[in-house]
Structure formats: C-alpha cells, structure tokens
Length: 110
Length: 114
Image (cartoon, rainbow over all chains, first blue to last red; front, side, top):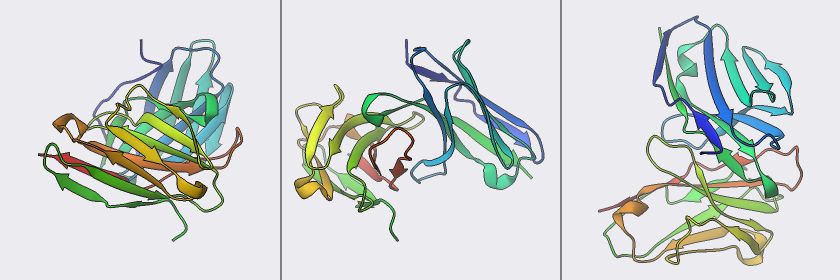
C-alpha cells in the first residue's frame, strides 16, 4: 500500500466552481500535511501546510485534515483559470522527507 | 533570484552516456534533497544532505547514481550509463532544519534518454 494515495483525475470544472481535492494516507503517526501546486514544467510550490488535525484557511484555499479517517482535503473557492495546475498532497516523514501523492491535474475552464 | 537554482533545465542524452546535474540551494538552507518525478506521478525521494553529509539514500538510487554536496553548498547528481528508464524530471529542494520550515523546490532538470 502506498503511503499517500491521490486520485489523479484529471478534473475539469467551470470558472467560479468550488473544487475539492482529496488524499488518503496510511500511517496515523504522520503529523505534517502539505498541498503543493505545480504548473507545467515547473517545480512544486507550497500552497498550504497543516499540522495535525483541523482546518486551515488562506484566501480562497482551505486545507482540512481528518486524522481519524486519515483523509486530507484541499478546497478551492471561486476557482480561477489561473488555478489550473497539478495539485500534490504530501506528508512529511523523518528528516523532513516528503512523500507525495500522485497529483491531481486540475483545469478551470473560463 | 535567491531561490533554488538547477542546471541544466533540459538534458537529452544517448543511452549509456553519463550525465551530471547541479543544484544551488538557498544559501542559508542546510538541508538539500533530490527527488525524481516521472510523467503523471508525484515526486519521489532520492537522497538528502545535511550540510555536506549525505544522510539517507532511497532504494530508488541505484549504484549508477551518485550525489555530492562538497562544502555544504551546491550539490551534484550524476547518473552513469544512463538508461531509458532514467528519463524523468529531477527536482532539488532545500530547507532549514526544523519541523515547521518550508521546502523550496527548484524548477527541475528534465532528462530524456534516447
């Protein structure tokens, strides 16, 4: 079983829609959860960072961690064409190594 | 630009050739990581350095791969006798030590083995 599982999509939604991206993870000991955004031919950039359970909000983005079900989510409100990218969930292991999901390719259609 | 810099951005090589990639981290970052990303997949950990010491290597890092970080500054990743399966994006990331610090990624080096 992979440590982090993510639906690869692709996901295509109209501009203004609410987007929900999800991952599951296998080890209940994980404490640090991230969402990265990766534009085509670019390196990943950190979008959201959550420690332990709960929600974290930053503008149009909300990250949610449910440790009881080992489920992490990213919600994007009022989605924009500029949000079109691949979104990667990640957990942080020892020595701050990152374990990534497969990535979900998102397209926001004007 | 004070971000993580990788060189070259693209490399096309013939099977069996050796290639070397360079990563220049953010100057105050003591930890440096190499990841490999294949098409349609998330990045996978290869190895990491704390200062000049290489502290961990993934099973993905075969004997044909070697990485160095002399003097704890820039790092190089060399692949010997390249194979078509080595075709991927090689990403470098750096960060300071500490649980709540952010990893900054470079733009990556895209390797194509023909």
